[in-house]
Length: 127
Image (cartoon, rainbow, N blue to C red; front, top):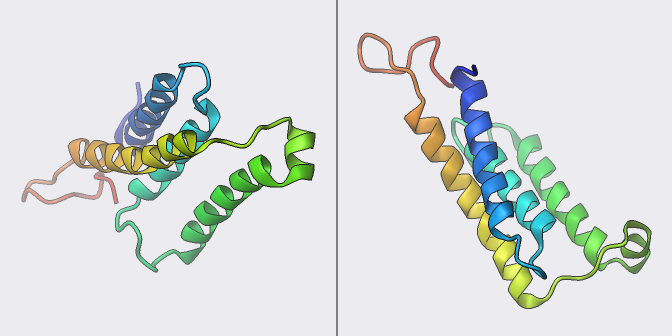
């Protein structure tokens, strides 16, 4: 059984997987949906998301997104990786899953935050 931060990560990752499973319809970009949702989860699990406190996290997320786009649209990479470019609808679906992953992570993080005796997050709570 997972507790604390591990449980939050597990539940948020489950939300990302759920988004990918929702895209099971033939022709929808399951891997792209899963990647976008997971990148949203990464940002959503931060104590203070989208701040300059850890600029390398934002750079890593941006680099991951750019590499995923390159794998789809750079001819050499798409040939080696056997990927196909996404259509406009598929790009929209994949892009819409990043905020879903972010919001799921924020909700899970808030729901499973432990509070101390004074009603504030204690030492055992999530950062």
